[in-house]
Image 1 (cartoon, helix red, strand yellow):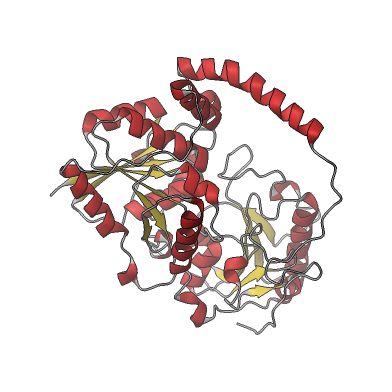
Image 2 (cartoon, one colour):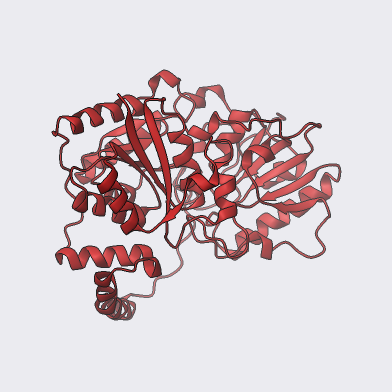
Length: 434
């Protein structure tokens, strides 16, 4: 039976994930992509890099407003829609589908990349979706436990991180590997002091290894948006007198890993790509190991280590015992495609269960318009959205001002290492050459 699914994408990371996952569907599924106009929507260049190797051309993901997407779903009778967008946008898109598309398609959503430790906001905003995609047995366990604790019913399904398998059609690099690749993230680490420290370590690495390129691999150029806000871009922190072999580049991670002798990050999902590609890696621990830094997942992987290992060029391979529970499970464990087909059959029989929103705010259509306006900002052009903004933003400003007056001044808290539960030294692990 022929089926149709529409993938709705926005930021660079969600575009890459959404397209890569949908590319795995069999020929019985006709797949379309659309880029929803939002504040975080990928630029044309970001979209080209995100879709590289997925089988989708950038022009196969045209831009459309939320209203245009809803009209398309209502008119064309898609069996399913994959909402691969950032949190607030996901909530708005899913709400509009459940309210305005009858009969509604199966709604699949989820989180790209490393999603542990589990966070409630991701569940809350996607509560009305039929299927919630995660990428490891560990993530499934953590999110099931959190959902049960918070009274949210979700159908979690398992998929291998889709970009671990696809590779470019043509060889990307013909010579010997010649680069150390640092995967930058917009929000980790977040402070200016910490990000300057990272740049300093990369400068020292470039000086220590003049025969190698030390690449700061960024995900956005000046003015481009990302899933998470980047307050201090690395491009602005590299000193003018930096070594010539320290370079800042964009592009696809696949192409950079093809010429890498070593990979380093603070916590990027690109570390999983590096493991898959067999590139010796290092996850920095100088700022600690915590849920906030999104590097707890690497405890037990053998990849954690301090910046002195980076400067010395000491990278390592992942511990095989860590792999099975963390992103490298057997492909036969994946159930997202069979569960998607099962939900589509329920839709065929007109018995697809309704899923209530977790948000219980009063206000009806005006409240939904306010949530949508906050998610989309100037990209929401509905009359009700403008009315909601006219009422809501002054109220929000007043509440924030009142809250700041009531907020007590607290003494700075010591850094807590969430693995050991103690404030003090960063976590480090013994280093072996990889």
